[in-house]
View (spheres, rainbow, N blue to C red):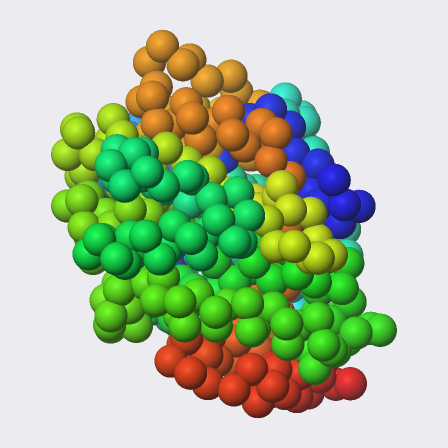
Length: 439
């Protein structure tokens, strides 16, 4: 494992994406249960779907509401694709909701710098059995200058190949472990009218998070990327990054994806796979809970999971996958007194031991030390769980770059896959990251 890889323990989690909205909570008039002050909390999330993870999270919110009649929850669920935009719009207007799902690393640093978040160090320290049971490094992405602003509610490997073994067997195709084997597989599937890799990149983060972050790391290595992200001894115009963009572009040139991949979303992408039209799709661990809920039994029984193939001559760990510890719940800096206490209580209900257990049981990996009962888990989730025991994690681009740079690389990859110039895209990214860091 490279020194920049996160050292992850036995249990891991998937990343489910989430949202936030505006407005602070207002303490209501009159008393609540047992004479307690009535408190209203606003919470934004992206658990609006019918996948097992979303259902589990909404269930926890319902249980909390029933157990705490003195706390009124104003809940808004939004599609994942609009989450970051909505959060940053609210942040710019200083109108953050009381609680909101947020991401580690870049978003945490930006929101902390904007004085928008409530540190939770004291609350965590009051529950050492909870704080000390997260996997190694799990809290790092939510820590800024010693202040901890959230804890992960899952773990998200972002780049996994889900493949239909029956389709591979039907056409005598080897599951690719090298780039040349991937090219051979793509050629055979195309010759037989099968979509090699279903892609839904309408929300432009998909190609970046689920394919490019792992592929680029295979080419450049994590150490180079972290230096370029920090603008400290490397730039995005370096030849290794141009080579990574060219390798990504090679996928579209070999027709690895179906036509119109920039005009359909992740759900439609998975439908192509579930309908047997595609041999593979590439997504994060979060896709599994949706897949087991919606795909036909014959497809699920034939599905296996692996990592991207190795790239000959690459400088990165060829056995790793990109990923982050999962999203967390941020608490608005504006909360005080009873509102703050209620918000922290809800945070614990969602991300404490019972919340982590509910997440794991929803076929979602966690960044928390809980053993999986494999006899009760879906067989496909058991495969993912065991794969991630031995798979190192490398950085995801959108967790390390500035917000402006994330938009540049996301848009740039859409352009790249349609024939754009790698050097031009690299220059735009370099100029933006340097400007955002004042370098």
